[in-house]
Length: 480
Image (cartoon, rainbow, N blue to C red; front, side, top):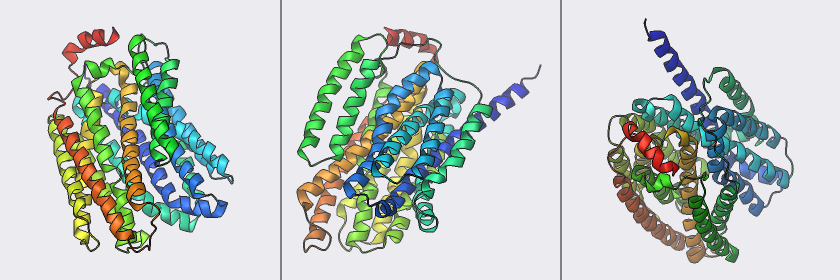
């Protein structure tokens, strides 16, 4: 009997899953980048202070970072489709409420709730794709999904500005609602399967509280530099991290299996490469935005168009990088990507007041090529090197490494600005000189971190996929 109908059905299910998850990835990225453009208008209308506006921007990131690992574990136990569906409902319904909010505290609360929805989505999306696609096609799926993220980041500033100017900042939230509702319906009606562990494990509440406390203090501490309490928070986060690791090693069902790192070099170095490369690269756009507007005098709209070079090339190359990772050793592609990205960072060390625009564009293109070749193959490395029972946690780690790296990157810039720029403002006689000194030191640091990331990426080893023939042996080790 022919197996063609079954094969066709499986392929159709995979396409449906990829479309649903890629659209939700696009709208999540678009919503975040568009809100950045709408935030000043919201603050002006509602008389929100800069400090509170910073909290509104930060609290979403804190929620997604703190909750991805716990929700990844819950998804492994109870079903990734179910958790993904709940995430879509929370994300879109909170967007609806945000569109009607008029108080600072109310907006903060709803942004945190929206972050919960985002954490549910981010913790399960990659895991579902890993469950649906065979090893030889995962890279392509990851590439398309990550490409949709960068497409959202590319469209966010331009469309976000247009929506804010034409309809008002509230429509940045309203536009998410119908799309989220349709996606939720499609998940329940067209997404086939549930994908969860055969054996439900006891949930680690103590580890969850320790983990969330550690990340909260670390991320909030870095975002609060240079205030004294920020260093206290960072120090406390290191202490709770030690307690967290100790606790996770001694219990039978940890929220984060450190044995995944101990027994799996490929997994460990792929995660470290992600953390270090995001730390090296995340603040680039922020610094260049300030440089283009404050030093070279470009308008915000022109600066935004120039900065689109990086996410634009990332969106194009991510599917290509993912496809290559299905046939070529991951470390070759990821290391090549980091190498090209590092060149772009080194170029920015030489920024001067009259630096030609071509230097900045070349750097952005190198950064876009670097991430286009790195992101999806590296995600393929992480997801292909763990057993299916831990896909939820591994998927959550992909997002968590990115978030922590981005926060560290901005924290480094904030610290340098505090030390070098101090209270100096735009228009001060020595502002340009001090700003350029800050950026030069920042890009020296970032280039050095990128070089470390390059070494880490290469050290992951040659394996492309989780060795199925050794699966039972490795799972037995991980369960002990």
